[in-house]
Length: 226
Image (cartoon, rainbow, N blue to C red; front, side, top):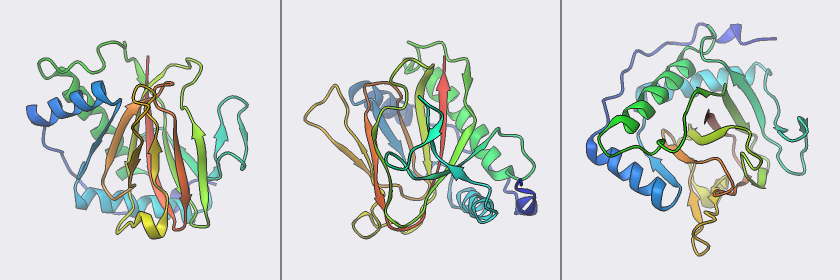
């Protein structure tokens, strides 16, 4: 079963404005200092809404599968119990998700080429993964503390895009909690609010977890690899 039922979702033509030098500098500073940064209002309401509707349509099509652990490619609900769907970026039934992937790629290129802003300069980024569209069904689902790339699988930068409108962490949970290893006294609690992009290094510098969610929580994750 695929997502053909979602082909008729409205497609939004949207071009994100190029980032300012100030925005690029802030991203660079946060990644260098903390290993993580957030960018709010990344795509804007129109495209963000279209992506959310598309994701909800795909989720209702029952084509999501249990999230798996990389080390054994098996589902393990004691560690994570989200539902996921992988998207290449050219499927006819994910036009708006595809637009997000293309915009993300263009934006990362822009962040990296502004003078003095070489935050990917230590890595020879060659490719990205498929996009992982995820839902934490709102019944206390979670992802225990983990590292995306603990053993050098090539993933360097984690890019998380959130789609959750009117999100209240106190009532709904689902907070992304990051433990920057280079700052033992800091814990970053990041709310998965609508149209927020989060960037962080994928290696052991950033153990993180998703706290139990009590409302359906949607996100799209893309990893960039060397």
